[in-house]
Length: 347
Image 1 (cartoon, one colour):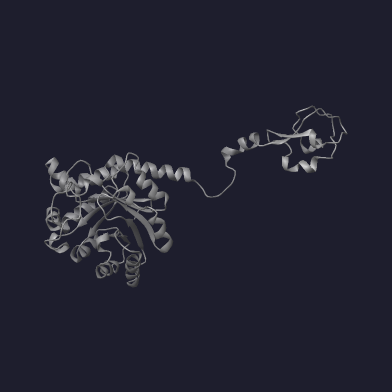
Image 2 (cartoon, helix red, strand yellow):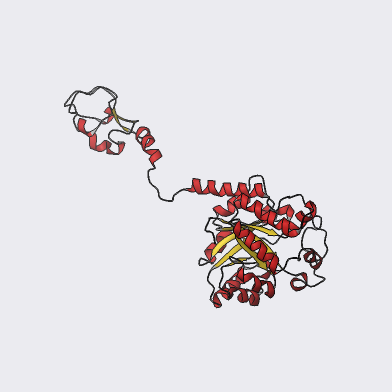
């Protein structure tokens, strides 16, 4: 895997199906176009989803998304629209993604896809919806690859249970992603401070953020997540946020992702080092803006310096004001005019 901080995952999900329809191309062609645009944006990983409607959901399972954006009434009907890819298609996408210099993964939603993806994915990504599916998590964790698990709509005890399950089968390469399982997530529900909570409560795993907040003009949500310590960030990716469908309206487009990456670089730049020292750029201002003891009157050689003879003024090239009590009572060695910046050679 790449080691960029934060590690940025473009969640293609199934958005490319809608793009394929809008552009009159095949879903596979659209998926490759998404990979192209993600690579151009500077993304680290292209992520897809691997499932079949019949193995992910019962036929009458109701919708939990915004029906004004995606009118499909049942989960099964929606998944049926987007489950056309098989192992060979994902292998083609995997190879294409790697050729573009990005990592590849696809979230498995059944045992069959979990098994065939093993030869392709750079890590496994587990959906929040499977956090409590402990047998499934153990099955995947046993394969020994890095595990990234979203923890939306969960109590801390459930997060703990999932982490323990992975460790029980010998997998300690674990990342958990704070996530709000609401599409789109209202900014007031984003609760990004949970990133800090997860880092404190689970110090031996990596913590990141899976975002469902609609992009703002500055991509501030992801910037804040990074500043709070998110080391992995995942966001849905689209080429057109106005397309109808379940995910486009809260996805980021290539420009949004470029803004986010620019934000991360800016944050790294301004955060700098935690070591408190005098920087090279401060050496001259430090000297010129600090104060020295300066004479308030003309003084003759041999005169004793009194408190009223001294005033701290800039620049800081002479005796520092902290030595005032040391200087008072001493004599000047030479004739000195008013406003002389005292140095130790003079007293």
